[in-house]
Image (cartoon, rainbow, N blue to C red; front, top):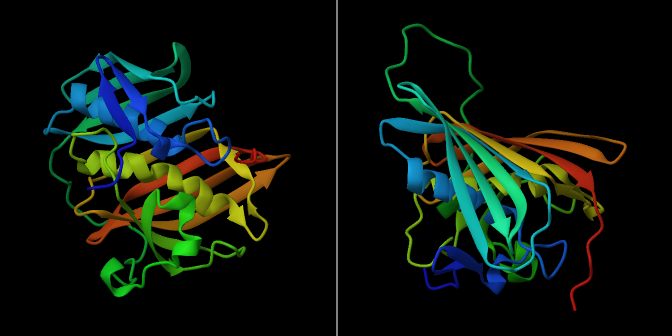
Length: 260
C-alpha cells in the first residue's frame, strides 16, 4: 500500500497523519481509525489463533484531535473458553474512547440445522465499476464498489469496502483489523439519507462468527431508526465467500463544521 498510513509510531504513542481526519471537524479523528486502532491493539497484545474475536464494542465519547494517541489494555477475564479484554483510547492525555472485546474458543459446530438468512447473491467487487472520483467517500479513505442503492437517496444500500492504506505504518493489515477498521462504515451506510449524513455515531459493535477472507468487506443495511435526534443503524457484513457477522451503531444528530 503506497498511500499514507493513518498512524505512525513514535515510542509508545501512535501519531495520526492527515489521512486520519474525520468528516465532522477538520481537526479531529475519524471514528473508523479509533475503532480500528483499539481492535488492532487488542489483537496484537492479546490475540490467540485458538480464539475468535467474536465481539468488539467501541464507545466513542469524545471527538479526539490529532494529538498523539496511547492505547492501554486490561485483561478482564482469561478463561479456557471465554476471554474478555478492555482497551482505552487516550488522545493527548485525555480518554476519548474505549473498547471491550470478547474472544471465544474455536471448536466444532453441533449437529442439526438452524435458520439463517438467504444467500447473499450479489456481484463480486471485480465485476462492479469503480465510483466516480468526484463522489469518492471521504476523499478516498476507502475503496468502494456500490452494489445497490445510491447514498444520496433514502433507499437500502449494499456496498463493498476495501482498505487502501495501512492503519499503522509498517504493520500489515490482519483480517480482524480489516473488519474492525471498516466497521464504522455502518453509520454512514445506515444513517445517511436524501439530505446527506446528519448523524454522528457514538459507538460501533461488530459481531463475527468468522474472520474475513480477502480484502473486500460487504455491507448490507438492514435497519435504521431515529427518534428525538437519536438513531440506530445495523448492517449484515460479508466477504466474497459469504456472511461473516453483523455491525451496529448508535448515533446523535450532528452538523458538520466547515473545513478551512
